[in-house]
Image (cartoon, rainbow, N blue to C red; front, side, top):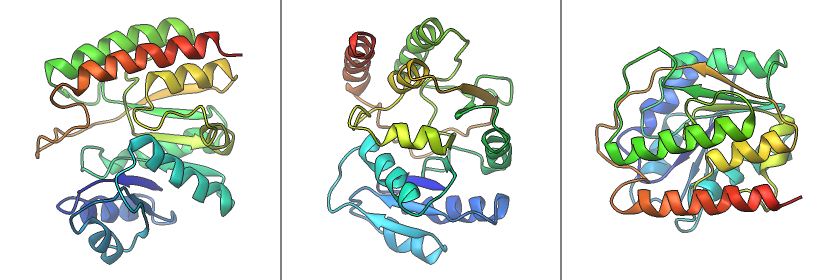
Amino acid sequence: MLIPAFNEEEKIAAVVQGVKREVPETIVLVVNDGSSDQTESRARAAGAKVLSHPFNMGYGVTLQTGYKYALKYGFGYVLQMDGDGQHDPRYLPTLLQEVREGRADAVIGSRFLGEGDYQAAWTRRVGIYLFRFVATCLCGQTITDPTSGYQALSRRAVEFCVRDSFPGDYPDADVLVMMHRAGLRIREVPVRMHPNEQGKSMHSGLKPLYYIYKMCLSITLNLVRK
């Protein structure tokens, strides 16, 4: 179980405990991305293994740290969810079952498949709807939630995601397109997500504009790359 976290001292213990309750057999790894608060100590106190970056390196780099750990120690699957408490851990067994039974290499937990009434800020909705359309067209299947970080990955998908082409900041729709072009199977399952009570987001402020620009550039490069 991989949990990327940056300054999540208020939520991280509850997230770790929720994972242990729903999938008690899993090893919980928190990758602390250079937090300046007590994220690391509270994650350890809750029973998680913790790897810490010396400074903030970005969401994609943080995920790759966890992927490399999983490959080094021979794990066959990786579950991942964010450390801010938005992802409901009750759906972890469903995501895990999908990859264990070989139905997909990447299973995406979608908040838009009927399990809740998740409402995002309008700036975030623009990005979701735009790249939902792009991912659906380029992957040849309906993708409803291309920005979801609630996922389960097969070992084959994890091996793919440790490549240098994996983005260091926003691995979203571009990674789904990359996976599809590499022959990996993608599947979505319905999950419930909770609003971010703290109002923090890596897509806040002017970041959505950069996100849209960067994602368009990344997808375009993926289409011309062999």
